[in-house]
Image (cartoon, rainbow, N blue to C red; front, side, top):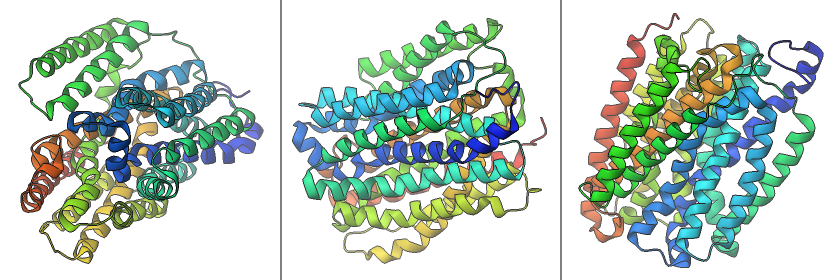
Length: 465
């Protein structure tokens, strides 16, 4: 058994392939599952008899589980074993996916998606922690984190396509049964092939931090989700107040603990700050708007779910390629400057998508999707690199958890923002196609401005810690 405190080179070399392949496969599966409902939302809603409000939760509930659990499971993995948390995450994903496949109504399905989010959080945070613990800083780690980042783009590309294809063969539930099988296989292989790693010094379970952070983020994301159908509703305002109180309590708790779940002193490190803020703005300015592209293509251009997913795969597929090839960039180039370039490319590509109109040809969108896809892949690679390099070696899970928590909070904010602009309500199909298209153009401009602000921030941060 290996630990970060006393690594044994022969075991580390022997397990390096598994330590890259399995976290990569887990991230691919998690992102495919995250995006799968985009292509089959109409069929899923019909099968569960879900109305407009329930449909918001069908799409957003997994983000709640992800963001609420990421930081907690990342810290738990550092202290109690990254392989252990990784395997438990795969088992939980299999169980929760079976719950989604068998769900008789929207409430049970939403509960299953929240549990899927928590399971995916364990796979993502522990998986990137395993990579950080296995590969020393330098070209090999840059290569490993680049490939891990590439799985984000590939998962986004393949999820809607796989769900639409399986839906055509056997209904929308078939995707969740496929996830059960893939998760069970992942758990079995990981238990047999991964070496265990953990921090040299255990800090113990930070229960107050786990509770205040998880419940605070859950309240925030629940408020964001419900806010799409009325930001002045009493339950939305109440949840926002509760979130503010809980997150303030989390900061107070962590600032007083000797061994906190999140070391607040890390925010004094420029690269850690860049990792968290960059991930937040990526979720807000990129993931939010691109998540809505398939819906816009269906409503405005009349494309089928599978056709819309295939067109979006130009963006997500190039994201995969760009992230995988980021390792070829000169090592002397700072990750922050490359992240700034990535966000700028995303903004340019999204602006290239402007001009949605009924009857428009789909090929007009290809150049914008190409540019945005390259930018997205480069950004994913740099954020993964910053997440593990901006923290001490024994806190790779904490770095991964913090960055990815910020990413999915940003994504939830982005989806809510774009949904409000594009649809005005929880039911996008209630608006005429022309109004829907106009809302999509406004959303693209707003999200591009967010990406530009992120690029400026990344370019100005001095990375020396």
